[in-house]
Image (cartoon, rainbow, N blue to C red; front, side, top):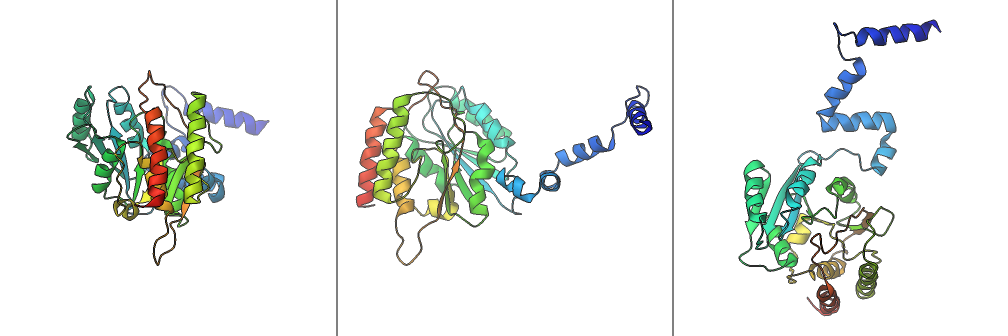
Length: 296
């Protein structure tokens, strides 16, 4: 009882209006909050290394850089906040934004972002060419160790970058694909979209002999040399089945690339909110699945 009273007295002393000063825990937290390395060390001490690795909390190798490639077309409503979320991720990175000939206020926002952030580079397509063409242009300019594809809306959460790149940094994978269908939360939207997605994924698996659950996902991470040395041809949303077919292909005299899937959350948007993929793209995906199984 005496110890409890003494403890309460110390708390009163610390919060005295005339002599207010932070306690030892507050001082420690303030110091750790400014240093990502110290934050990770503290969490490892509190939770243990195994638990932290399960949550994607681990030290980033010295000198590492992530290239984030973002194709952009008429995303003035979402773009600035998306970039803020990407920048908030505590991983050294560069942002490569490709303006696919936007006709709204997107170009002005991109100009301001490039002026404000020294790790952002913006490139402009001469005409509207599609997501695949924008990604091809973006991949050419990457200088990071790994490359991740990020849509310019809020459907995918950049806070999940650490767990997306973790299998590659651990030396277990060469390519990582984020799946919306293996355990994370998602916004409830169009039933027939999910049916089409699963059908396309199943058909792609038949031809590639992979056991993916979400071929059409945006989140794909590559070692930079893999994606920069890959000859990609699709201009629109055919990028997804094409790149899937090509990472699954045998390489003469070399082992297959190691491919991992990790669960991701998904906050899909409606067509009223700017969703662009449609029925025509589903048929294009069907064509690309067969086309790139037959030949490059």
